[in-house]
Amino acid sequence: MYIYFDESKYSKENFIFGSFVFCHENPDGFITKILETHGFNSDISEFKSSVHFGLNPKMLGVRDELKNYFHDNCHFGIVFLEHDELENLGFIALRALKQFLNENIISNNNQIFFDEGIFRTIVSATSFVREIGLEQNQFYFEQDSKQIKGIQLADLSSHCLTTMLRESLGDLNKQVKCGENSGYDPDTEFEIGFDVWASIRYSFLREPDKKHFESESIEANFTYNVEPFGLFISENCNNLLAEKVRETFGKVYLGCIH
Picture: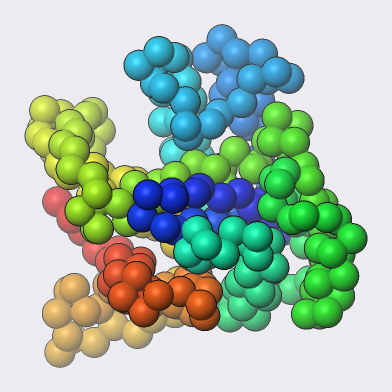
């Protein structure tokens, strides 16, 4: 398994999202192709969610293709902490990773890549890997996302989660058109949080093999637990903020929305 980690910081509401993206195959070649198809030199250019798409519209096409790839080929686990815990981000992420591997019964011998700046030192990161019993995996810290392109998927995931929580907190109010191939009239407008959720909902790490019962509603039968399979909230997180995160990401509905 190829696993990639990156984060999205949002100091205004005092939170950080990290994402572990799990891929059965190395996505770097596909991401290289996407970038070059849209006119970028993949050696010096990369997808960043923070890019201003109005000033760089070609990158919007890259984002859309990455979302399609993400939908079909990846799953992600969510790491949530307050911005005040930034200096402990890497250690919290490793604890989350251990939970995700255990809960989803993912074997060892994975290749795990972290973006730059997640840990203060590689020595401290390596030591903590041994301390929590993850040393049978191969870790690569301080990786350049231009070279290890799978990290760009984790950047995309973390940004999507940030957008959804900002809307849940009332910090963001934006309507977007659903566009072509959505099952709706292309000019139909949705709240941005719903639009983002609809594009990534099948990629949440979630409970497996859910049983369906005729006596239950469609919503109950097709709503899956994400926590603890794909959601880790720092134990130091403010209770009200933690509950908002659970309300937004603790379960995911996978039934029809049309």
